[in-house]
Amino acid sequence: MSDVLELVDVSVVRNGRALVDKISWSVAEGERWVILGPNGAGKTTLLNVASSYLFPTSGTAHVLGEKLGGVDVFELRPRIGMAGSALADKLPRSQTVLQTVLTAAYGMTAGWQEKYDEIDERRARAFLDRLGMSEYLDRTFGTLSEGERKRTQIARAMMTDPELLLLDEPAAGLDLGGREDLVRRLGRLARDPYAPSMIMVTHHVEEIAPGFTHALLIRQGAVLTAGPVDSTLTSANLSRCFGLPLVVERHGDRWTAQGLPLA
Image (cartoon, rainbow, N blue to C red; front, side):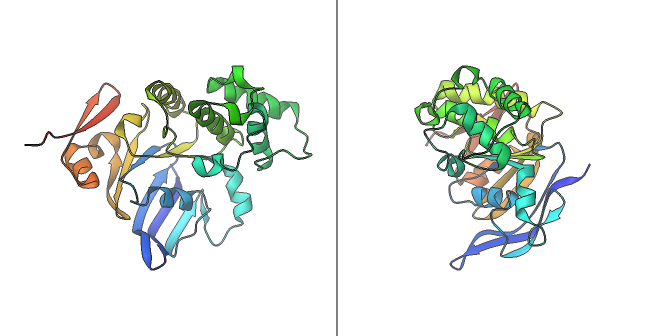
């Protein structure tokens, strides 16, 4: 099994501050990772390195077998699917849901004069159907609810048949129903043996879908621990990560975390 991501002593420094500091971490083909940590821990920075949109200040990063700094990122990026708020802000609100997904076939965010093959449209419709968006094909992106936008983005991220799928806080801003619907659909995707390797950033263990295999805990730019999800998501580890006493429990294939009551 080959690595789709390998970081060795990676640091990213901005204005004299290390956003991530000497991180070594690898993701093997077929693994589904969740990155957990408090605000400002460096989670999104790691994801941006994995997406090739951010280069390390020091250390080495290999993505899909290619070394950042020694590869044409415009050839690498179509092999990586990404969904998150930064991309969502670039998507035109006036485009239909179907158009929003189709533009990913050309690596664009907005349609221009490109023409799509029938197979492109079939793929876009299939991914939208998988995410429960078949009834919204002609709706404009700007009129969707937050949950509907999240699902459209994930369908869009799958459009290029990526080898690595990156999800930056996909459940952020969702109500309980929207979160549970998204977690259920992500679980179906995570358990699909033909789905790409996956890395998801979140703040909440409740958002970890069934099928995720590994977890990385990060605090103040440094890795606290990483490994199989069952042995990594412990009360002791999460308490260290978030800086307060927590009780972490697993119920079936889902997780919960609660703070201890004050004395």
